[in-house]
Image (cartoon, rainbow, N blue to C red):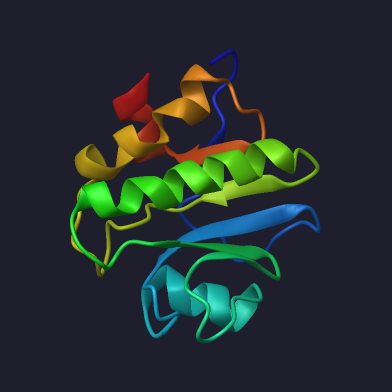
Length: 131
């Protein structure tokens, strides 16, 4: 990666082209953590647990092990590649209420670095594990 693209640990506002990427559940019940913030402030929709809504992008993390999260992260990465006009600020998805660690989740985002996807910004904890 030619330049570190680090998302802030404390995202409270977004520029018009920025998207808050958060861990969700498949049912889209955004009751706590980053999901609640996404719902309250960035346009996530109740009942929608996957994809882009407003200035938020939901990645399900509550349905099983890490292997069940990977397809959703892969879909997100493909989506980001197709939407270069947007900047995606990834939070530590799955590392709060879902109970995973950065060591478990960060490898799912390795393509963001190896393919140098310019519009995906990762948390420092993920980036440190992937460099």
